[in-house]
Figure 1 (cartoon, rainbow, N blue to C red):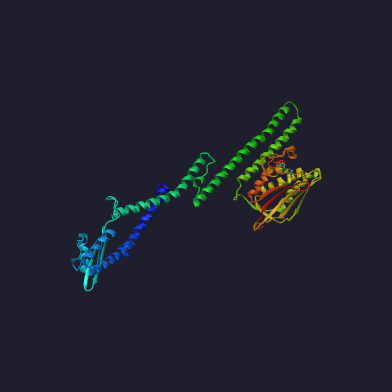
Figure 2: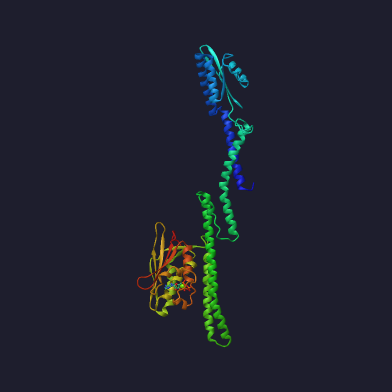
Length: 452
Ligand SMILES: Nc1ncnc2c1ncn2[C@@H]1O[C@H](COP(=O)(O)OP(=O)(O)OP(=O)(O)O)[C@@H](O)[C@H]1O
Ligand SMILES: [Mg+2]
């Protein structure tokens, strides 16, 4: 049985058939008569009582009228016997003869609900014993096959109804699965815009939420692939300029222009940095929750970065200071966390004017029940135009007039920092200061166990 539809259908059908059969067995074992049988027995008793009363009061004429009336109104052919003598002109139906004999010998009313419904009601009145023999005429049928009293017809109806219901149920379960399967096939063929939820509009169950999750996954894959394509395009574009310059310099060196060698070295350095940054980006993408992580002492990490940056800034009289709390830990890959903060501090140092000050502050920034810290780097540079405060975190984004361009930055630093922050459940944002300068705020969850 390959198809889920067939499996679900047969399981439900078998279950409902089993239920019907067991109910029939239980009711026959417990002698539970269907409501219709009990209703008929009571009605026949009433008819019998009325017939006897009418006979005793008005004789055979009244009895005959009454029997004709119930024949017309209720499709019941009946006759009344006193002992064994028939009081009406109606003969005892041949099908009821055996039943009558049984009632006479057993001295009580008997009913039969086989292909025909028959009843012999025994009632004693004023020393006489009456037998009211009734035959319920069949309901209208449509040919010999469509006869509600026939066992085969009933079985066929039960099977048909339960098959229809089970078929509908199985279809409602398998339809969303088929739609998911179709979408998966389309995605596999390369159509990343294929989605499963539109086919399940109006549904609000587990399968619909599975389809929603499936679509979210497809959207994420599409977004990631689009981003990768953009990144690849940007990388090739960025590599082209230093390579073209290297070509020209190489030719100049060949012609004896040794001064171009220094330029070649600078271009090679910038290529090296770009490649190492790209490798860091690839490393972040490959990292996940299960990659190497440890409790990193954030105070000491910032101290190291500040020390290196101060050394670099000394020639231009720039200073880098660390303030705020010290003993906090963040669970992360120490190398990636170092790159994340260093990129921001290096930018601040690059953009702060000569003799300017860069401050790196660590503070508690917990929200609700999540313990967090904020590493805020401020400089005294010109800041960033408001419209570009988000864009500076895009790969290869540089401000046209910024000094970083002149200094050969590839525009990868902040995008690397943002990806690392996101990887560890944090965030990074930039704001211009009221006076002059940029503030870059990195928020990260702190480790619960401050063990090293
Ligand atoms: N502190 C800052 N002050 C002013 N502008 C900044 C500052 N930090 C970043 N920027 C702007 O944001 C751009 C992107 O920064 P990012 O660090 O991503 O790249 P980069 O520094 O130019 O190059 P890279 O970091 O790859 O060497 C910079 O080119 C610069 O224009
Ligand atoms: Mg940078």
